[in-house]
Amino acid sequence: MDSPDPLGSHVLVMFDGVCNLCNGFVQFVIRRDMADRFRFASLQSDFARKQLRGYGLDPHALYSVIVVDNRKLYQRSDAVLRVAGYLPGLWPMLKAFQIVPRFIRDGVYKVIAASRYRWFGRQKTCMVPDPSLRSHFLE
Image 1: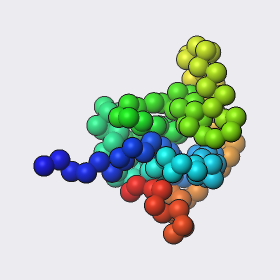
Image 2: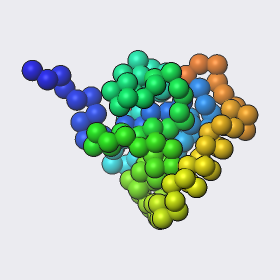
Image 3: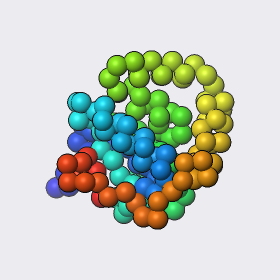
């Protein structure tokens, strides 16, 4: 018998749990997730490491945001644009940036990701969600 899928129909957003920019992104998405579509896991968690290994990625390389939607993995700018596509309001319009070649989008993404601690800071430990948000996180 298969074990239950912890994601169900949810979109998984894996993020660097000590990165202030990444934590801000998660908080931004949660505030707009009226459809309760997203679930989150820090890249430092055992759950995320297992997911990354399942997709053939190094679980010790801290990417800043990785999204799994319908069992397909999205990285870098594709991940951010995937999330934007599900948000209410005008945010899905950001998906228009998909016409920009990936190497350019990802180049910008990599510059921001490489400087995220210097520009936005970092925490000593991963964010611990308060009880009202705990159901959004998989650990």
